[in-house]
Length: 502
Image 1 (spheres, rainbow, N blue to C red):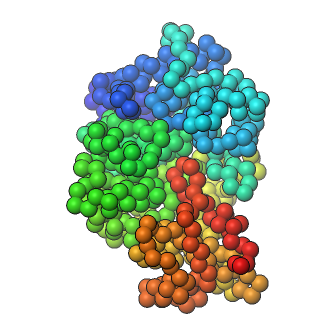
Image 2: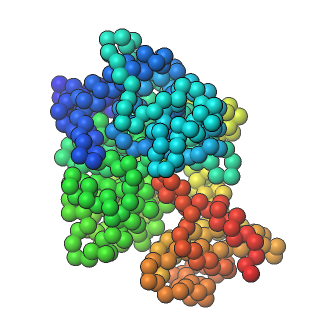
Image 3: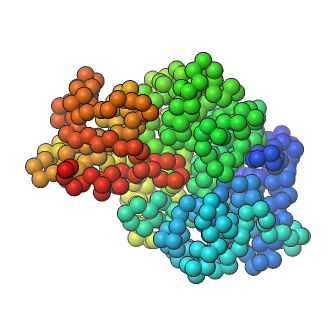
């Protein structure tokens, strides 16, 4: 058997994809963590034993199993065991607590709940019991085990809903996003083929495996047959030793990860912080062009950025062989099968990687237009070459005296200021203007204090229109971020700074 990545992407289910990869390269590693090594063959064999153990507990095809587990080899094994059974999985980010976890358990009607026990000082088992979760079991070092001969045949089709992912709950409850095996394979295939990876590459999973990026990345490993280093807890510079030990060639996660790696490189000018690294890749948040140029210039690697969301894990992705101009200013191009329509500036999507909707039918009805395109809430446009340019969020447009202002445009310009490590521009209520433009800035260590007149002067010199200039500046020690891909939580900034300054 000598199947190519494009042949493997035709697999109907995730389990079929894993089994076909194991048949092609059973002895090649797929996951590396803390001195441990799991091969593709072992992934298939051990996941079947875990599936048999789960079957003995009462898990059947269609059973809803929630899991709130850290990024570990055992988590991947449990997830593939559930895929082998054809159960419905509801992954929950391990940093979520009572409100989000309780909501996910109730809405998904989970019949079993896998937890890590006490993890990073939090007793997940006690929380699960406090929330009245059903079928609670710990799955950290030890997993259920059984004889695979008792198992029913694996699922034969991949178009049934077998995944419930959760959007980040901010000021309202999270939404349960419905995915199929085929939608996840389609998303992962887009990522894999766009990055032009080879079996000689070594990747890294430095984000929560329970995030939608988990299957996205795993599909890529299965298609191309290369391994990834897993990080249960990612922090720099501590994690650098593992990147170097395993010779990681592809790293990233999101814009915040690029900034973290760049900061480490700046502490070691003249020597590559990860000698084998050749590509940073990710998505999840806008990428300022200046950050792209700084990474490629100072780290000596390519940077490809993409666009995805929980509802559509991969929409577009940058190509390492594209021009610097396109890689710096766009999110790449969509793969075959992903239709992008721009309606009144909003990006709408249709294709196999698009979710089936939400647990709440009313949310599903509101999310899709009459032609079956998903409304993303993101604003953008397509270039003549088919590259997608993001210009902001529908909810992130500041309306000042009736004029629409893109927060992203101002943030991209601020990224070039030497006294700005990161920024978030938000609209704050104002009786006279409707909204005023507020720049919230996080400064790099040792930077001189920043003033509003200095900031405005800089933006003027960059050519920003007068009506878009910030009228308020707030300097913070750290911008509030979520615990998955470290997106800035702008709603917290609006809440904090909506009151008039003293």
